[in-house]
Amino acid sequence: MNDDERGGERQNEYDENQNSAHHAAAVVSSRLVHHPTRHVLQREEYVLPDVVVDDLVQTHDRLWVPQTETISFHPLLFNVSNGYYVNLLRVKGAGVLSRHKHPGAVHGWVLRGEWRYLEHDWVAKEGSYVFEPPGETHTLVVPEGCDEMITMFHVQGSLNYCDERGDVIKSEDVFDKLDMARKHYESVGLGASYVDNFVR
Ligand SMILES: [Fe+2]
Image (cartoon, rainbow, N blue to C red; front, top):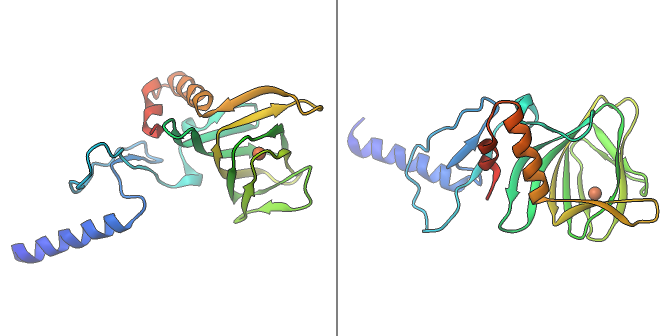
């Protein structure tokens, strides 16, 4: 292979990367390996690096941040510059995520298992996409017989937990989630700064 052919091959790889929505500048993988960028990407100045998380469902267990005995989350993106977060929510066994409402929109994609809201008739099953409109109050339930539920959620704004009258008793936004993850990664030996992989 001559230099021109090698150059052409490199250009093709570069084009593939450019065409992918997930070409890597910073990579978080299940193997906790940061892959170097194979090519120098031609970036506009001030453009933030990409975030790529491999193998969503099989990710390393230390990356899951416990919220209760059965509920945990895996950060994918803490977008502090736009006030939203994207994460995987995992419920092991049947369980309930307390009644809550959102001031912003939420998008969900079920990767494993199923769940429903007490306030709705539909069931979100593996492969389902759900849009939760701003202002809605609901209670997520994973039914008996479902060993594990994993859903990717994109949450704009915050998750506001409510009492039975609908009054907010606790709120979680991107900064709260980031703080939880930072403390967890410190406690499991990954180091507090590990969380920075997910911050943009
Ligand atoms: Fe919700």
